[in-house]
Length: 490
Image 1 (cartoon, one colour):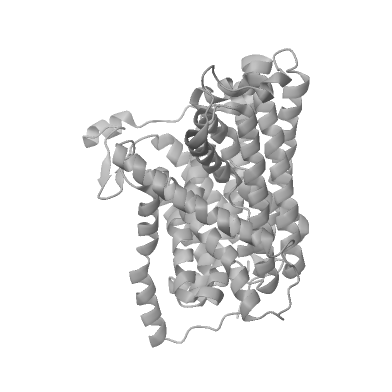
Image 2: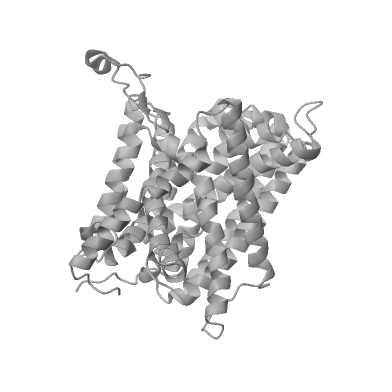
């Protein structure tokens, strides 16, 4: 039987960690964060705090990876610790919301900047012939409205990117990993270059004093309003930091995964935390916190370079942001499909998803299914609605991940642990306490915003409801598995 090929080394694996995280968030999230929390010192503190918590989570996951270096990552850990029902719901959430939604959202971000170089069609006349317009909505009960006819040109470009990267990753994990290494290296060098331009060429407009300023007179927050503003800003930071655990999905294709994956996760996490801090220092240095908050279209990086070199830098920034989105889309396509492959191997997904290509030794059917669903989310425009629920669902799962370390330590205290969480038990305890508090605060805030009429639904609760839609599929696939003989897990 054809099996997956162990073809990825430390450099490619670290590139996947960085590429999965450093995408569109760092170029747009700071604007909304600055509107929520108009204080440069507090915002820089938020990036440090969320970075440290991300590192604590990374340390925690590394222990699980060392013990169970299996293709599928968190799906396999949850299946082992909590039972296959919880494991399945994690994989279902990844397919329905997290993985496929991220592919759709980031590829659309790529297409937005592609339009800086080539005008894209809007198909206005074709839509009018059909009796609709770009702003005609589709109303989804209990979820809200989506706008499938908007930005059809961008959606075509984004769909083309998803198809291209899916086909490339079908042809071999080595090829996908090599592309990831090259694109991540280029992306990091490009981001470092624009930061250098900001500090060197921008000295005529930048001020170090901006790092200690608030946005506007009278915008100082104290007490509970300050705590609420910090929580909102942290949500944006966590969105930008998210994706650090995706590399565990491909453990079955990494050489010496017990050592390589923990090293890659820790190295990659330290690199992107440092990068994010330096980038935000550059934003505030050039624009101030008020300028970051008011960047047109939340395009902070573009506004920063415009302030330094004028309109001549717009094309350069657009190209860098396209490279960043391309790199992150590739890493997300490469890693997430392995979750569905692992589920199919256990008889809990589309049966053909367990197939491995005889020539390329890749989970080609899982990759194709992922690509198809991502394009459906992309073309219908529903990814925008779904990804708004993503951070809350993900932090529920991260909480369960950290608790799993304690369960396994108690269940088998003498098991081999190639990587042990530094500072155990305090590091995972801090992570669990924070993740639990963050989940509760987010849920309460969502309920309050819904009751106040500022959002049409309780996003966090709806996200959980979407995950639970997987239960009928779980019971069906489990029943079907009982009727057929499934290939044993590799």
